[in-house]
Image 1 (cartoon, helix red, strand yellow):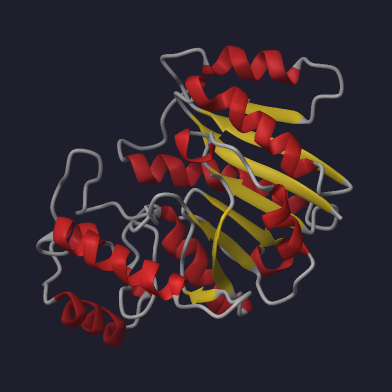
Image 2 (cartoon, rainbow, N blue to C red; image 1 turned 60 degrees about the vertical axis):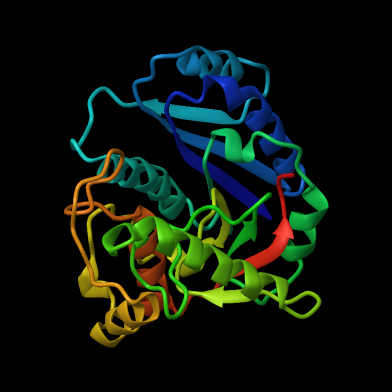
Length: 270
């Protein structure tokens, strides 16, 4: 049972050593593992840390150095980076029945409880599994859980709706029965593990893909938030052209492979 652990890396210098140590602990749960990273130009020591780590004896790290941005839009660049990693997974799907997509910043730069992940590897009731985070579930941008199907950034009163959706998913997670998982359409929250064969016919897309969301779901979203859709530019995200890259990835996997996207109420990194 092997696993490919992937992700984009940019300006992650302060966190990398701890995250890589956590990855080694995750890797110990598998017969073998490999780390595939997409490095983008950084202003800190990220690249040197990656070089030092990859030069260690028996290192399992391989990384690609990107020379220029693909797009002026952040989510488009992140989608390109994740797709580069995912292409490796797809080409080697027979060798790696599991893959992990994760972020390499402060979210996963904490202590890790590998027993939490280990027990889910023995269960068959998920195809994609992400986890609750402390102190709160933070990744509302990548979340698609009925009736909240679209980016909170594309709603009137987006800050208020972030809080509404956050409280909604946290209540759902806290009310699960013992050993229960929360089904959804898209979730990432900084770390997710996947059964590779269910994700061969999908790709990350940082563009707005309203064509993947049924009209009745969009209407339900607006009704639940009492907000209309808006497309405006923010400091970090341009809501006219950008959406979280995970939404399209998970929707397509559900549509094409009937992938079961689940959230665990347990905290992996604490």
